[in-house]
Image (cartoon, rainbow, N blue to C red; front, side, top):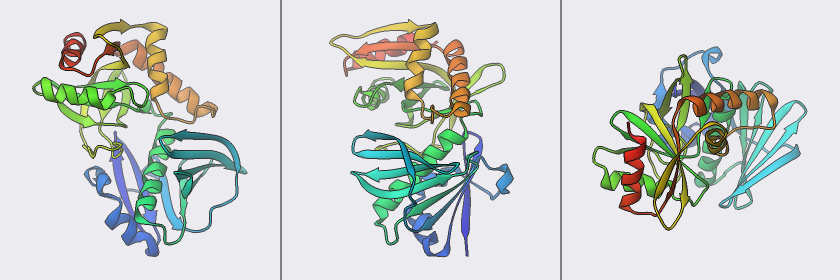
Length: 295
């Protein structure tokens, strides 16, 4: 018997299902971070995507691109007209995601008797990648960022890995009363009619377990870079756009996805303040940032 569950992240509902041999492993041991986002079952036609999880041998595919960051690899490829994502941890295959052309349905194939830690790694990465791609044409962007809430607004801290996004978020939590952490790695941003931008928590939060089903008006983006001083400036136009693009997940070499992301990025850059903070990892940096970005 197949068991399934539905989750809603940033207003988008998706479904994950598994055959009987994987149900307990998936739903009892791997989905704690999704529980705050659980919703009653809906028909497949109402879902952003439906992902099935099953055991089996990894399919052969034609590799197109690979990404490698902090010991985690994603190999991207194709099988005929289907997209493939091969998730590896320290070069060990954990699962292969095979997606329909429209990304509405997908199958995650995992090795039999896979250790729980590798299984969970594959499931989380598969759903995060599928969510980012399937929502790209829905005025939605999955960011690589830390985000805090303060006075009913959310503020995203952007930057390359190791720049200090999480550190700066912790400085706000420590030194600016009334600040809360919304997500530490992968928040979702949507822009609505009238250019109203909203940031949401998600089930994906990196090494910090922060899985909050909350939303806030988007107050601004802050691009961080390390420096021996604290200085913040407002970015506008092309500079603002360029600050956002590297921080958004998506399959940019596929035109429909790239066009959707470009539309969202352009709307955000034009309507949400974007700042560049050159900073030290200290209290002054948090206060300099807060005094500029909070209206």
